Length: 458
Ligand code: 4AD
Image (cartoon, rainbow, N blue to C red; front, side, top):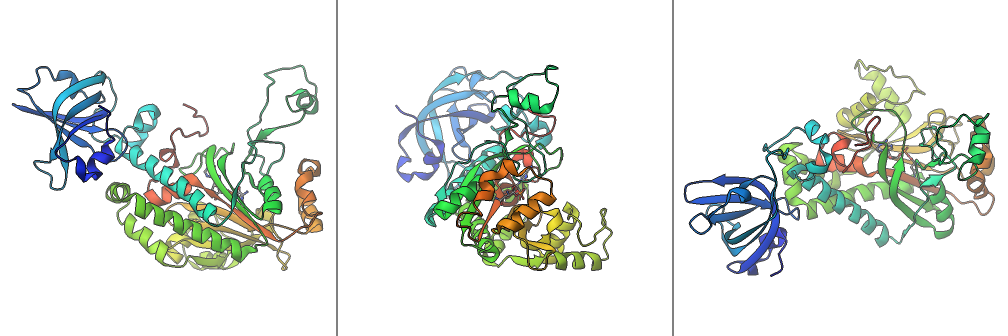
């Protein structure tokens, strides 16, 4: 007989009082005089299924009771004796699929997230990761739904690149040449390498995304980006998943509207499809999470210029670790103050000084700022980086030259401004950051299967 997923056991009312087979791992077990109880989980739902064993019917149950053991159980599905509206299986036959010795590390009911990070191959078997990974899956699918429903074309941009999109030089080098003293200059070394020039893992698919948008109008990419920044914070990983739409004929307010709609679509999808998971996170990670999410989808996001934000920060009377002056890069403490204490909701900060932003952003008429915005959310900080792109060839070249960039590396990008240039805009949303926001999980290392951070590639 084929086994049935445990989520179906709970959902399909027709299965009640029938013979069923389920498979899963033992999460908890309890032995009493005549009866024994096992909570089984197969990963298809957060809920554990209770297996009831009549000890008079089964001789040796020792192996079944060990946490982490994988079992195949057959028996009758009946109404739970104690929990209303729930079901349990009266076991008739239990087969051990894989034994699990007492060294299995998940013996306690709750382990700290720090400890769980040391066992990434096993922490997936906890309720937290069961819930996080399902929310992550639902969010990923609904991002595709959002763009597909609006006729955006899904583009796969290269992961290996010769150009640095963000110009911050925080790229992982791609090379096939090992350690060697044979080369006199870096140029010789690069010339001898696989591509004949310097290559790296991409920090963003934007530059190639713009190429595609200049033909297909509305595109999005959704894949990994890599950053070798050595910021060991709860919000940075070296490999993250990046959603990047790029839209032709769109100016900054148009792309802001799309970004807000996308965030609301993601939250609505999670509210609809992950009620059990959200309830779990609301109880154990962020009290009031569900209320917060409902409020976010039913209110407009705030919009504030960088200049206004500097003013608010200066007048706040708060002692910030990093002093605030017009032209400074905002630190996490400033971003959090603006979104958490001033706006108390997601806020688009717009029109940053051009010196602290990337070369590709459209220069505003004031000569000082660019048409860029970051979406800041309470608790997490920046989750989206967004801008209208500089569509004017001369202004783009000027910005690149002022930054000392090698124009040859960006030949295609520059050519887009020669051949039928149009106003266009796009943004990058960090998947892990939005997962942190919708789950209340505070460390990015806990919303990804294998976090890659400085000094850690376990
Ligand atoms: O603001 P960023 O650097 O923007 C870009 O990369 C643009 N090229 C995007 C575009 O316009 N197409 O990054 C965008 C988002 C951030 O807001 C953040 O959510 C996420 O990517 N991000 C990271 N997430 C986790 N770890 C890191 N090290 C991240 N760096 C950026």
